[in-house]
Length: 238
Image (cartoon, rainbow, N blue to C red; front, side, top):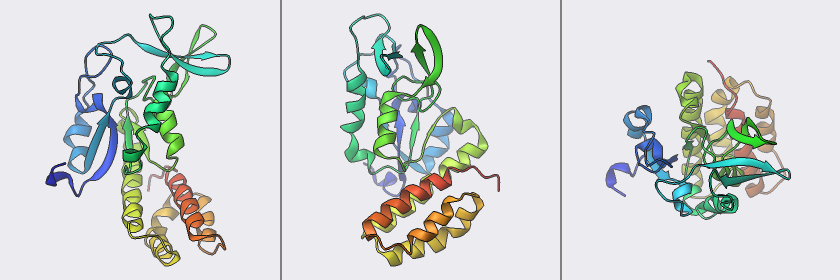
């Protein structure tokens, strides 16, 4: 890693969005806002789960299908190609660097990376109810992590909200590097209280109560983090 990036916030990203030719057709989906604007502030860590599990470039299209009440990721041409467990494992196997992230930008609509409205075949009917399996498992592993796709980042309010969440999580991680104490939590809470209020969420009452909880510091810290990041998802125009 170059010295240039040492002070940038680490954000995971689907490799194709940076211009890497890793898509099924050997192409990319380079996003100029990400590469020309956000890259000045974030250190992007690219990853393509489909390539990581051994699917070639180019490769056949994979798709999500509901089978016996379970979503599977199958090949579109090869009858016995099922990469469901491999995609879940791709997320689990990358936990070491995922835990260093303050955000993740996924490829919209991808059966591996899409965070919402992914094509899902249900009884031979195409719906938009799917979630990419790699993205789904990553979000389960790190429920507090800010995530977006490149399509949603075109919305100014969603973009601003995502960036704010990334920066606040970065501040949290910086605070936690030397251990978390109740005193540190109270100081962090006071510094961000005005921001929390702007999100008009009932979760702020939970944050307030956690600071007077009789639970262990570790329990308070985890509950505070997850509640805070959920609160910050509430979109505000102020």
